[in-house]
Image (cartoon, rainbow, N blue to C red):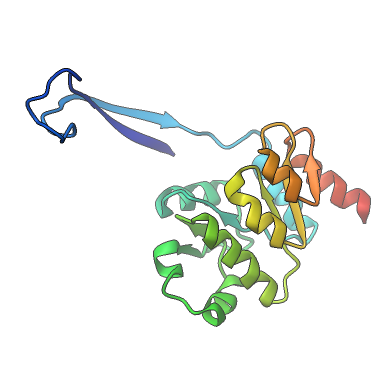
Length: 183
């Protein structure tokens, strides 16, 4: 899966367009950027499934991108991946979101407030929720989850402060090791 970025420019000293710098640009082309899945991530998801841990992706990515990544990871135990876009999420009552949360594998185009809604909906559906995150925008959901897991190296101070667990090596593989040893 590649992300595509269009590139154009305009000379800054050109004041002929007044206050609209997005006009009269010179088109340069498209740039394709690959954001490959981390090595071992697919095996990690399989390990979570083997341990009885359902894994849900909550991402700001567009639905097609999120779907392709989830498919490659084998995120769903079933053949079919269920995806819910935040545009649909905003039209749902809390009760409807709770009912759907048990069936959704991927939440796409999600805002920080949506992350908190999703964690609360999963909890209302009777799930024990562990949330991973590294940014300040993850803090409310990390705090609300039964187990908030923050990244120690790359994470923000806010994420580390509200989390229950801090992964010092920033490797999700550490979580499956901890789960297996804890059991």
